[in-house]
Amino acid sequence: MIIIPMVRENAIVRLEPLTDGHREELRPLADEAEIWALTSLRGDGPHFDTWFDLMLSGTSAGTQVSHLVRRQSDGAAVGHSAWLTLAPEHRRLEIGWTWYGRTARGTRVNPAAKHLLLGGAFEAGAERVELKTHHLNARSQAAMTKMGATREGTLRRHLLCWTGDWRDTVFFSVLREEWPAVKAGLEARFA
Image 1 (cartoon, one colour):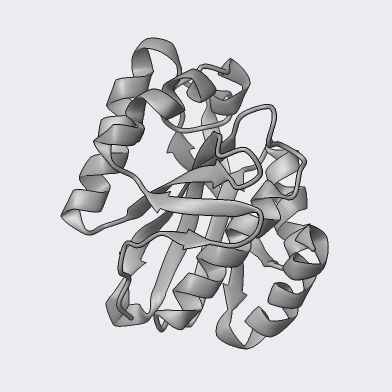
Image 2 (cartoon, rainbow, N blue to C red):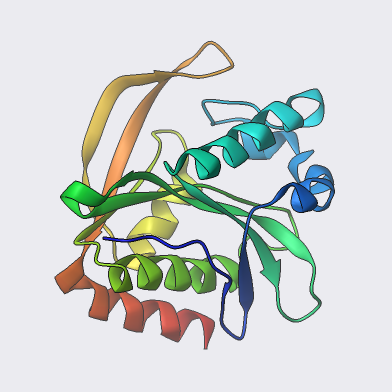
């Protein structure tokens, strides 16, 4: 499995490998407290630069590839998503750190971005793509289920969040042989 950072796009979104040049485009979007309410690390307000630098350092270290998500219709930056926990020796990775500003939530943006990220992962040789979320994040769990990902289980007290609360982490996955059906479902949602 070889993951190469590159621009990926379809009619709905353009995923651009994150660079420092994206910092100021993402900053105002990240300043919505609700985005960070159920995350392990805070990225709004004065915490944004620390979060952004962590995303860049993961990319530099080769442990993740972060993307700015841009809406094609108006060219606006609308959020972030990444390939994380790259494990080429096991032919798996995770899609995570996905969040969108208000104008993109509940639209065709997320299915279109997931289509590109999952497709790119399987094209690169992945056999398994993981997705995980906070046990209280019903919106994220519903999106993963609607996408066709398989709910695998929950790791209890998996992460201590910035709020001081424990996160039970709900795991989902898509396997290579499941990708054609998931792909068709995603395409139907953003067509």
